[in-house]
Amino acid sequence: MPKVMPLTAAVLAVFAVGAQAECTQALTVKFVESAPRDRFDIIHTATGVFVTGVSIDLRGSQGALVFDTAEGGSGTQVFQPFEPGEGMQGVDVADGAQRLDIRLTELSAGQRTGFTIDVDDQQAQSDLGQIRVTGGELSGARALFSLTDGSELEAVFDANNRAKVCT
Image (cartoon, rainbow, N blue to C red; front, top):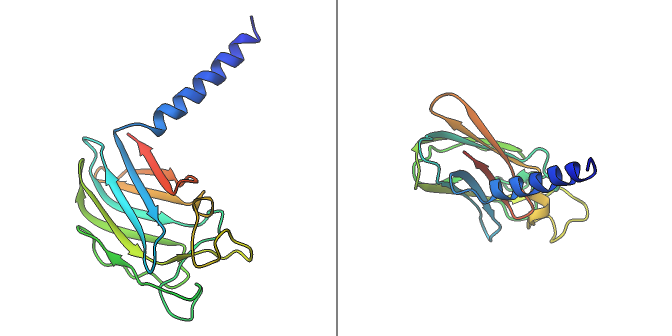
């Protein structure tokens, strides 16, 4: 009987993680690799949660990613500055930076926004070359959501280029 209990707990833990990943009350950031601009989509489906800021922290990413915002800097070939979406204030992102912090007019359930920028990896041997980012290279980067009550929620990007926190 004791051998069954650990197995049962492990199975329940797997189902709990799967259920959380597919929750409908969530804050999500999706990364879309594109040319010439990469895009981050911010999707809000959590009722009763009001977001005032989002930070993207590339430190910890498997691809040693950087924001490539200026010619001749840390990135490879093509560069693109930060272009804010609806409800965002402009942000100065230094070339080679690994974190950006965005202030939002209040973002609530059912709303979405996003921004474009260029992201490059810094690996000598990368999946698609340094100019294009794959899901595996973004894994480990984080999205941080600042809420109106002063708290912060964190989500880690997975191999599908998605960072999602269930509320």
